[in-house]
Amino acid sequence: MKILFYDTKSYDKESFEAKAKDYPDIQIEYLKSELVPSTAKLAKGYDAICAFVSSDVGTETIDVLSACGVKLILMRCAGFNNVDVEKATACGIKVMRVPGYSPEAVAEHAMALALAANRRIHKAYVRVRENDFSLGGMQGVNFYRKTAGIVGTGKIGVQEGLAQSDLISLHCPLMDETYHMINRESIQKMKDGVILVNTSRGGLVKTADLIEGIRARKFFAVGLDVYEEEKKNVFEDRSDEIMETSITARLLSFPNVIITSHQGFFTYEALDAISETTLNNAMAFTKGERTGNEVEIE
Image: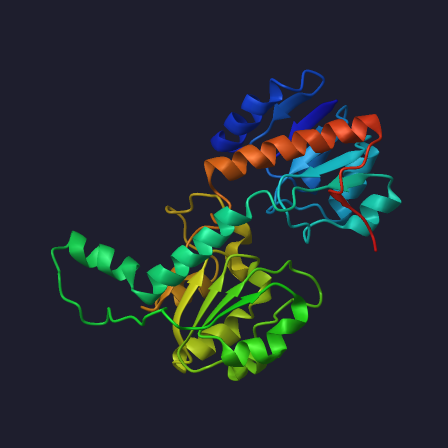
């Protein structure tokens, strides 16, 4: 099997190359280019492509991949909201993913965000670097005996969990029923002084309503590993560029908000699991076997 690997970062190649030694029947070619309709044509002559959460695997891209003879889309991530699964199915292209590659990694990062945002670690780090050891604006709250609401399914967002939780952490896939589940209405149901963490998908939160809630002092702290504007930013260095919109800057302007760069998954163990499961998916496809990792229309 020949696989074309899109949007390759150094850590991707390192982890996949280490695992590929155990799969002699798989040949991988690595591209730095991201997957969009204009680059999909590069897949001609390949059996499969490997894409990530930031890839454009929509209708137009799949049309091009189908014309190139691609039969398998390997998502090296759990989410597939960026894939037109219905179109892929219609074109005879199988979509496979990596569910649950390292729930520990994401859970630990969510907890790290909650703790850091609560205790203003990001502000303290900057202050101490400048020899400022004052404590004004640094006061946090104890998590001991507080209630944490782990939002893992769509409808829980409008039920009792919001009203009872001191800490709300989002761990849901992005689907039609979960899009903007955190909005003005659901925010109003939350406790005053709640801490919100999102390590799932930016689209779960309506950013304008979140900013409104922050300004109204509804939130004691907010920790975001994902956010709506991240599409062009995620995994890229844009430090020398002028950003197109001000959403990220507006969020970062609040002293009780901490943002990281979609890195909840980013541990050695998680990358090892992602590469192994992806390659196992490819081998299962060639053998006509099922792994349970297939993405299918319900």
